[in-house]
Image (cartoon, rainbow, N blue to C red; front, side):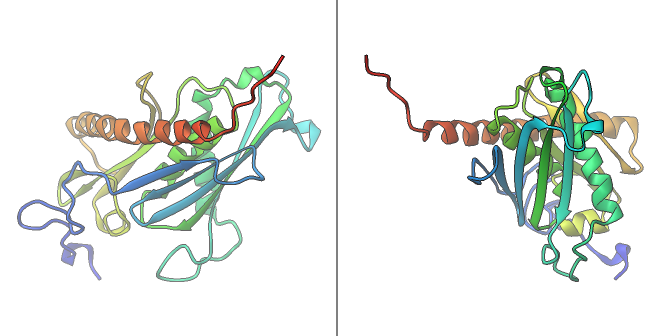
Length: 247
């Protein structure tokens, strides 16, 4: 199937899944979903289903990897063999997964007070159960919630949003087919309260005006995801039992 033969926009300018260009897919975030982890989160974004578990801060193993002045953050992004529809993915880490693991770590680190826990490590495990485009940004959104759930001190939550170009127009939150058949994509992560960008990648050609417009569209979409992150954490801790000391 050739790119040129795939229509991603209808005649009235809507996308093939019925969304407007600046419209996110349906999303849901839950915190504290795993009992055996120090922190955890689950996100659904469209057909994406992603689970994140956080372990730490803890002693570094092997010890020679410990950093004397800060916490070592380690991220592992992995797609389960049945997460993609077209073919079964190999269970061994792919080059793409290794790269995305590094990108996610770098997007999260600016939000964390790493210096508060020198000579320790925190591991972030991300499992993509079902994938349909924009998994790296959805993973960042969920990982930030899992880190907060683990009690890791953070300056702000991090929200990831993808934006791309389809048939010459910018569109928020690319689905799988839009990512594959579009003309470019730009994963972005930011701390909404601080208005600081922690990740900006681009694959394709974007003009300066398009980049400025993309950043504005991403900020507006990020606020919606940010509110869902906050809701998930509030719901999580509102359900915890309150200890009452009787004297």
